[in-house]
Image 1 (cartoon, rainbow, N blue to C red):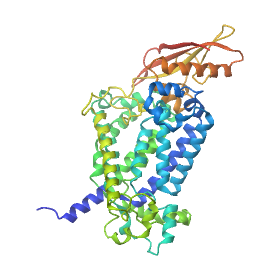
Image 2 (cartoon, rainbow, N blue to C red):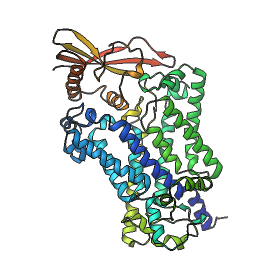
Image 3 (cartoon, rainbow, N blue to C red):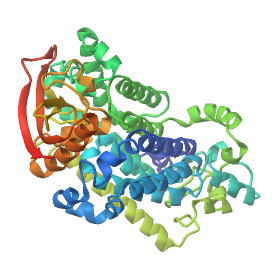
Image 4 (cartoon, one colour):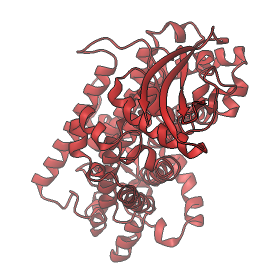
Length: 509
């Protein structure tokens, strides 16, 4: 017996639709994550990673990534004041996104400036950064300001309609389907890669990962010797990833249980490893899967703790989808203007079609990216991948089997040789007592991992930067520096053998 069309529609809407309050939480989270990234990572590393006085000047960018240099607004100037100005503007867009003020404009501004910042130094990225960009791009086609926003309050005040009902709480469209499927495929492709891994299927991948000292927080270092616990975590993560496709199949409590499992795992990652905003970005994506009954329970709490100007809101469609069954009378009201210039149901048919085409094209690009990650239509996946390569692999197929750091051998004017970290602070060139201190920041770690096996064109600005940094730490001029890459192999039980020391470049100061 063939199911009635309404049954199929209901099934699709319950799985590929998103609660408007989930979209509001997603928007708020996007703003927070962008601000955290700007204030804790990009601003402290502004001079080092984004100016011509740092380790990756525009000249090097143009030589190694000419397309990025041509497209990045941040590459228009190598001055620190210019980069600070752009970071401040990006912060304003992030704050606007957070409160839902001129949300579409804020999303466009955040997307453009974030992409430009990433293009200015692609060596300072990880998988969380690229996923964040996809969220911003797909967010352009979602009604992010329909609830809990300044836009929603402003247009609710302009409308004589009643407050939205429970029937108005969900939206289903090509854009909602695209972002849910895209996010699920991040986990699915990772699961496929892990089933190609001896380390993950052998049960010791997490053990080895927690001996990669450059990634570890103090808690991660403290847990690194709990072998049985880490073996259990290994299998739990493999099983959870293997069940990720079920996120698109189940609803209600089963979906909520899966979401809770993933959120808990990402919180564990954040507590034990230095991964930047990556765990937070993944939690943002999981918010979109939280069922409506949960938001119905949370909404009174939000409304009692949030200023009145942010709690009102009406269902708003920005991509030609439906705003929940039984809400057609609401979806055509003036509240749709809260999406500003972006296509709404009141827009012309041509504009709505264009919006759908753009979503479809973006989704096709993302599908190609996912397919390429598992070797479909291209070369087979590599065997050892770091999360710092801008991929979405989360240490798959295999986690690295070594961690590394850099030592700077500096010869002073007196003939004395001193050994320092990349930021000029003193360190031994052999294995440091605490590998977690080998890089002074998360951006340094990403940069250091990406330039391990590259040519002199990358190391020359690092050497020049090191001359300056060592000179600031020393009481005498620096004659020359030698950049040394030191690599320490590791296994499930810790370091293996002695560090391997490789000279990368010697440069006069």
